[in-house]
Length: 118
Length: 109
Image (cartoon, rainbow over all chains, first blue to last red; front, side):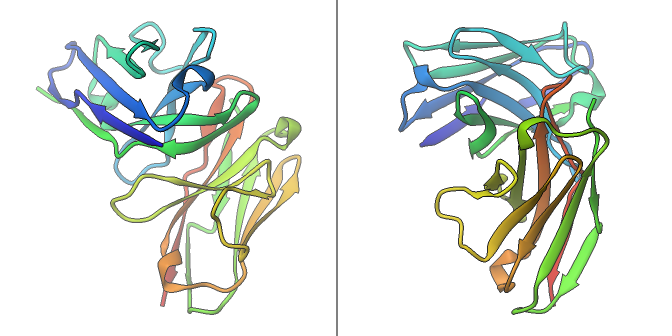
């Protein structure tokens, strides 16, 4: 299993970024996938998840601003981040769910740094 | 939101000693949907324990988890130098679906 994030960088408050996560080594179609972020010195924070049926969920602080999606033809997970705020600054991890019905993160990418600053 | 509070904040022990980490939930964790992760400096988190007490694939048996309801424990029976890391607990249920504790830093003297 390998998860490789890309698309991080510097954005201004109110700006947008799109993160991608290329997944290999497992049957991408069969597993829920998530985005989890971590600010320096803090515990991880759930950002968003997408089920095998395309159903989505979001953490409270990003609802209405971020959109998760997946492309099963390319085994890629996305996170579209709009209306970015300074407090969105963090390392964003793509994480695979252990199995449907087992809500734990068993594989994580190396992380993509997102910095929101003017 | 289910808040997870971990204690102690920092644990400083010697190799070979036993480490006991606590995770307390503000409400009962349904179906014992509780996991523990290890995060070494500069690395991504690694799943150690899920379902409160099941070791993840490849995790040594000196790591064990216990507890139910609102009180959970991670025990490392014989610390090794590579166990120096921050340990997080995580639960599933409610809104948001997943929450994490703030972490316990384990230092090996």
